[in-house]
Length: 336
Image 1 (cartoon, rainbow, N blue to C red):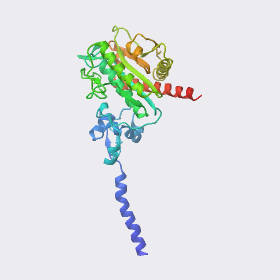
Image 2 (tube, rainbow, N blue to C red; image 1 turned 30 degrees about the horizontal axis):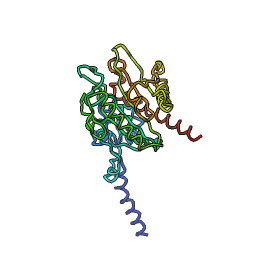
Image 3 (cartoon, rainbow, N blue to C red; image 1 turned 180 degrees about the horizontal axis):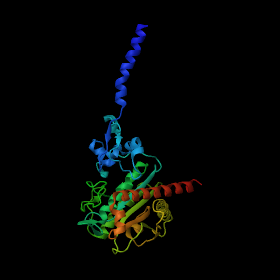
Image 4 (cartoon, rainbow, N blue to C red; image 1 turned 45 degrees about the vertical axis):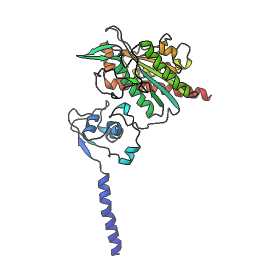
């Protein structure tokens, strides 16, 4: 009997350290803290710990993902070294976003080519944000990276044709202008416009020929430049003879209409999708494609959409959802 009691006591004592290890560390949010800054303060990569943090603290996170000053938040357990080594990291997305969690296999077997407009020696359209000179190519590239990350997380094979190895996804409003973008194989981008377009077209078409038989789509992202007074909604072009290109542009457009009804019910979405086969990339590239203009960089209203990092993330997310709609629709048609 004494031995049995001793055994029970021993089990209880051994259980105490285990229970203590299972407890989660907590931290009080200070004024000005966001989820990213709170995680960084505690030496946790937002790309790795954002999702588990939100899951642990959903009751105390506002609808726009803000923290409440003075509230106590639980911190996720730090991943052990073995698990960290197995995580998929993409340096191109930058330190805060390099870890990409697998969300689903919805796009497994698909191939997406992403081109952000201009780049290298050509910054595209120029505007001012306060006293800072900003350029089209930086914002198109940021949206493109965010879109690439969404696609990869859902199983797509993604080729980012224009790359900047030290930019990554950025959460600033004024994105610093530089000219060090290169083709994905580190080939220098020519200054001559025709040579530049030929170079990226050649790369896309080479990759396309290697993936014949798969669902392949090309997304080209630009920021428009018009007079300051011209406010525009996101609009899309496709090749006049490409049925798949039409369906892709239509699916993304339909997604934007749906999102506008959901998030801006008092405003009519006026974006369009139309044929525009005289554009070099529309005319010369082989995959079905959508050419996307995300706004007028010189218009104050459009600048809110382009300069706000949360809005750039929303743009990428909506384009991604449009691609999913197109793929699932095409899959259903092919199955019949």
